[in-house]
Image (tube, rainbow, N blue to C red):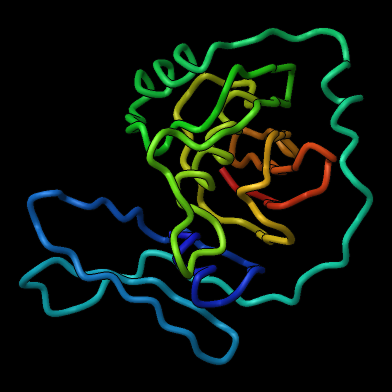
Amino acid sequence: QVAALLEVAGRALERVELVRPLVLDAGAATDVRTTFAAGSVELASRSAGEGGWTVRSRARTAAPGSAGPAFDLRSALDRPGGSTVPPESFYSGLAGRGLELGPSHRWLGPIRRRVGEAFAPIAAPTGAAPIPGLAVHPGLLDSCLHLVAAAAPSEGSWLPAGIDRIEVPGDPWAGSWVHAAITRSEPARSAADVLLVDEGGREVLIVRGLAL
């Protein structure tokens, strides 16, 4: 849903609200539309035969931020401690928590996790290719956000509710490592930041304030 909002609004969004999940049924036709007006963008859907549209997500457009210093990828990877989780085990764990993912949404390699953070190499699965008009491939974006589950201290289910800011300052296809860090961990609400960087540590996708 967020990838579709970025398609309409450009490469930066703020105050992203994930109102209702959009679940597509392979056996039924679903219409999806995005509308843009007065600095806001909204995604809605309706199933065949339905009269009204159901809002799925909305956001405000934002100006691109200024480039910051490169992420110190090597220092982050060299920090001692933590454990490594094979991707097969990670995705099996997600399935056990109710999140079944097909091959197009499995981009993560071996995950290095510590308390409150996780790193993973990321690569496109066989058959994935850039989609014209989309700033970021939906499978790539979803995979980056899935890494938050490895960083989270709890093994319970989690459901993203919104994003303070998301920006695509570079080419996401150049991304080689993704980093997720828990920035708030409370019973009522948690939050995380996610960065996708290239081999030089330059940020190509930034997610701040992913609310859980």
